[in-house]
Image (cartoon, rainbow, N blue to C red; front, side, top):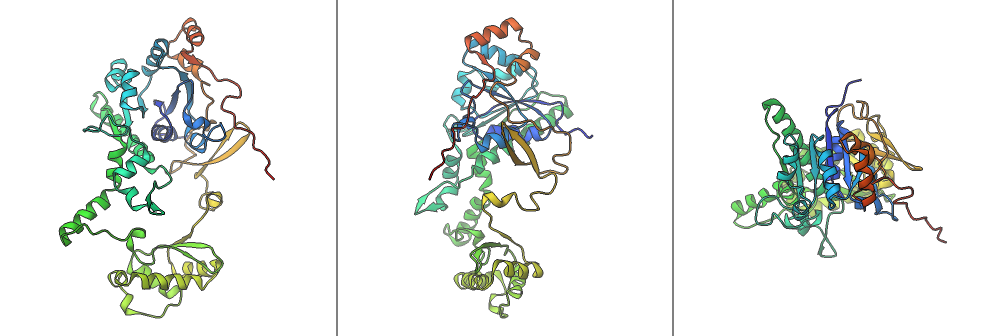
Length: 408
């Protein structure tokens, strides 16, 4: 069996919530051994759902190992440094203040392991706000995303923490680039620094450049209508049996195919996107009426026969029932205690068949003794650390879900 690309690499994750754990998750799916170092309270995602692990923890912490260390205690910090010496990379999303307080800055960690790829995902990268705190919604608010997404007139977060996950993906790109560069040039690894704010700027590049373009062409910062790239007919429409279909309507060819599929009369005045944009509401009403005239099955049959791009708007509970999602290599079966989960794989060719083993999300401290022992902590030192609370091992029934009441 072919080894995964990061087989033999060890990554230490000091992560909470999402950005760093998501980055380490991708590295794990690429074959790296990921050691999740947690405080005695554990990653907050261990206790988000009825006192027990959340979907975030299960989805992005399976196949990792857990070491529980109190880094504020000198013995705990010393144990962590021994572990750090064995690592190829460290990824964390501690605040800059916390990193300094715990002596986990780039300089601190590189002094312990000069070959380490040090990756810090923080609120803001270098600049006047570099010590400020930020979260996913803060990044949305400060980079123009939230202002256009309003609920009852109030600017609101998108929902999923896309900026956290983009930052995690960017961190992986940086780590891999640093590893590749240091290997080819036989030099020390370059550190990686990812800001949520800077991530938001990059993700919003198209819109930020677009507003500059309109300002320079028109003399004013005119925006496109919010949603669906302002393209009439590109969006979600309801069928007669109240199911929603999302139509792909990017080109004039798409519009022609849709018109033919739904039996719309030929209309040269709507042949081009420029023409359709000028009468946006008219086009929207036309598409709504055409879709509402058919049941879901009838509409999808027509669209498919004509080669129109579309999909049903699915609720979460039905997403993984789709045959495309169930194709081998798309999902990984992950057990946790008495429950079983189908967890989507990191998308790549031959995912799930390249020797990356599946392990349940680890209990807090499940690998503390094993990994610190192999890092050079003696049995006597380890017992002392346990007695002082500098390290902890897995405890039965920790982070148990609260029982569900039968409500009548």
